[in-house]
Length: 196
Image (tube, rainbow, N blue to C red):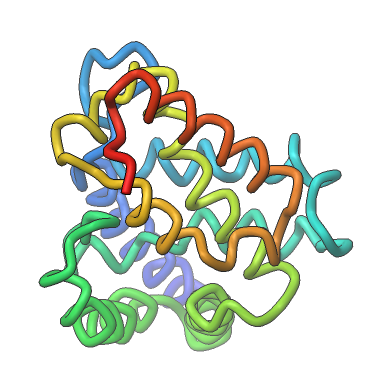
């Protein structure tokens, strides 16, 4: 039992590093950029609150741990900005290597469970993975809206980039995707998103 607990504690301390992974999305008050831990916590809360908008019935006992661990690989792989085309080319390789190391710290049963959840999220095939992706894509968009489009304006983001990133979002939630589109249109009018 002590060896198991020691592995779990090693993992717990290792993933504390996710608090230092700074994202490109600002907090709602635009005072600073959020980190991966804050992002993952926000997604878990959103999963509970917005479950009713999932196109299919989803198991929160799967969605919540899925969103809590989905970015742990960024401890080694770093955060790849949503619209970074160059970074996207090596993202899968970097993140898979990170998953091997980070989930490998856990006892075998828990490491396998987390790895399978992460792979399910990445595969984007199950109802839970689709809903988790809705949350992962919607949360930064909601924060961009609240922070007056700050990150979009700083990066010169185009409507086509947002739509490409969200090309499957309606598969997880039609209602949330419709709401997101209204926010994008609002920020095109405000000049924070480039129409194309």
